[in-house]
Structures are given as C-alpha cells and as structure tokens.
Image (tube, rainbow, N blue to C red):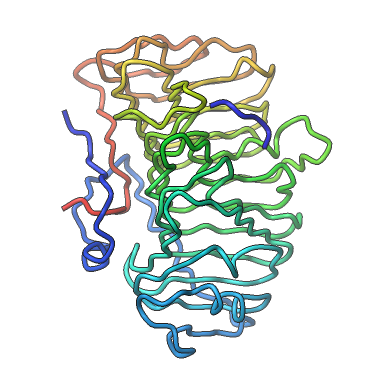
Length: 372
C-alpha cells in the first residue's frame, strides 16, 4: 500500500449476530446534518441476468463461497437472501463488468461471517459498466496487514459502488489492517454509500492512493455519501484525488482505536494527496478524544485544493481543528463546539462558535447497527 503508519456518544458494541438480524434496519438513529441522503435503490440494470441464491439452494447458516464462485460473474445480478452465512473469502475477487451482488432485506440483514483473526485480500475491480456490492456485512475481526476489502474501478468509464457495506468488527489485537482500500490504479469512479467501518488500525477508508505521485496512480474519482467511519487509527476517511467528494458522512473518534505499530494517531478527516477541487460538505466530525486532529492537511505534500463546508465539528483535542498548509484550503459555514482547541490555521469563512453553533452528532444519518 501507499503508506504504512499507523455527553452523547453512540455505543457501537459488537452485536450478537443472530439477534442482530431481527433488529437490522430498525429506526432510532438521530439525524445528522441537514440534507439526509436516501441512498441508492440498487436495482439491477435490465441487461444483467438475475440469480437468486436462495433458489439455488443457499440456506441460513450455509457456507456461501461455492455459490459466489459459481454465480457472481460478468453480467449478473446475484441476490443473497437475508441470513447469516459462513464465508472463507472465495468467490468475491477479481475483475468484473456490469455485475451486482446484492443482499436482500433490511440494511444489515445479510451477514458474511469470516473466521476471526484470519485475513484474505479480497479485491473487487470494475473494468466496465457498473459493479455493485450492496447491503451486506462482513463480520469477524481481521488479522494480518491487508485490507478487509479493496475496491476500485480500473476502467476509466467504469463505476464501482459499495452501498451499505458494513465492516463493524475491525482488527484483532496486534493486526495492522485497513477497512476499505482504494488502490492507486483506480481510474474510473467509486461511490461509497452509507457504509459503516470501524476499529481498523490503518485507516477506515483509505482512498488517497490514486492521487499519489506513483507511476501507476490514475487519479480516479472518489465519492463518499453518508455512512459512519468510527475509531479507525491513522484516519477515519482519507482522500486526495481530483474532484473527491465527501458528503453527509459521520466521522467519529469517541474512543481508543486499535494501535498501529504501537502508535495512536486518530485523525478524523485526512487529506493526504494534493487533489484539486475536493469537496467535504454537510458532514459531522465528532472528535471527543483529547488528542490528534479533527482535520489533517498532511505536511507530506504541497499544494492541493479543497473546501470543507456546511459541516459541524465537535473537538476536545489539544490539536487545532485544521493545521496550517500551503495549499488552497477553505473552511466555510463550519460550526464548532467542544472544549478543545478551536484554531483553524487555513482560510475560513463564517465559522460559528458558542451558543449559536450546532453540535456535531456521532450518529450516521441513515441507520447502521443496533442502536436500541
């Protein structure tokens, strides 16, 4: 990978897997910033062949690997019935064109249970058309140093979609893993919609690589819409490509992340590469810990351009909200609360503090997990 480093908080404890299925999709999550995203409908395009794995014999509790290997391929829309399935990582890896893997039922109603403490490098690459992974959890704390899931669009006109993909169990003790990794070769568009990623030691969403100064870096488009990224070391959300968008996302540090080589560096939003025209809009940055930066503009590059707007920040950290940087960075219409350092060392416009400021929330705008 590009780099190896390492009052109203919401409890997101590990769930009892079977009991969770009955609760998935329940209401009760507080709304975040205005402009709630409804998410994608995820309907398969007419030119995909629909396959129902339930009709193919898959039952709750079965191993799903062979079913995925046989049926998930180019030009297919494969549906997984609600349930909990054992999965050893087979059948979801490689290059795809115009394909979809969709968990049916309410959000979170499909679980793929990967063995605790093990790891397998699953990379899903869109070469043409839209490739969609939608509405399933990958359970089990990962071991090793690989990403839980790598996803990207290798074709310039291709789109990769991760819609309601939940990775709630993070890493096991001592592991150095990423949640979602977007590789440098990403050339098309990736949309990451209403995903839940927490407790990883080497970034929750690591999507800056395509904007790096690498020979194989393709600077593809990265769009993050909604979701919860919580207590991931190094950063919760990491971007750096031209035109990157982060909208209606909850980025939360309200507890200790797993260490990265023994180090804790819990940034919330990190801009790691000098992308142009990046936008962070209508987000909640909830930083109730007393260290690390809510917004990190990396000192390891020069230049770059981004506006962070219509966003609420709560900070109890001694570090500034945003550090000084030589690029073109603007915080606009930002609401600040908390007992920490409110310094913003880049250009600002309409920063609201005190009693008139709205308080960031640690909740995703669309429900994730068991909040009952």
